[in-house]
Length: 118
Image 1 (cartoon, rainbow, N blue to C red):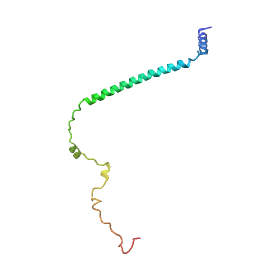
Image 2: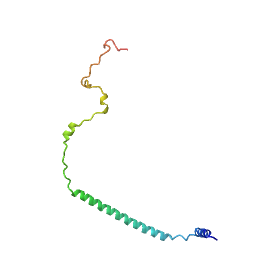
Image 3: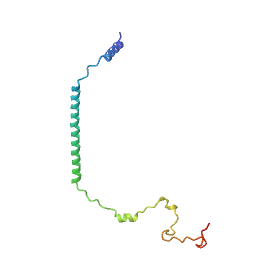
Image 4: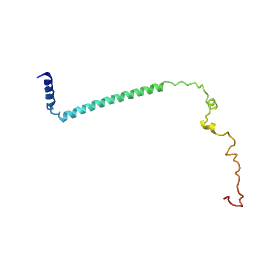
C-alpha cells in the first residue's frame, strides 16, 4: 500500500466514526444561562459607558460659552439687494395694466332689449 491509500483509509475511518453521545440537557441549559448572563453584563457595561460619555459631552457643550458671532451682513441690506425672478419672466409680455384694477369694459354685442346673440 502506498501513502495515498493509507491517508484515504484513515480519512474514511475518521469520517465513519460514530459521534459521541450528546451532552445532557442540564449542562447545555446551564451553559446557555451563563452565556446570557455574560452578554447581559457586557451590554449593561456598554450602555453605562455610552450614557457616561453622553453626559460628559452634553456637560462640556453646556459649560462652554458660545461667543456672539459678529454680524457682517445686515438683514435689511440683504433683503433690499436681493431679488428673485422666474426664468420664464423673459417670455412674458411687458407690464401694460393691472388686470384687477384697470379691467376694461367688456363690449356688449347686443342691446338688452333685442335678445341674445345667436
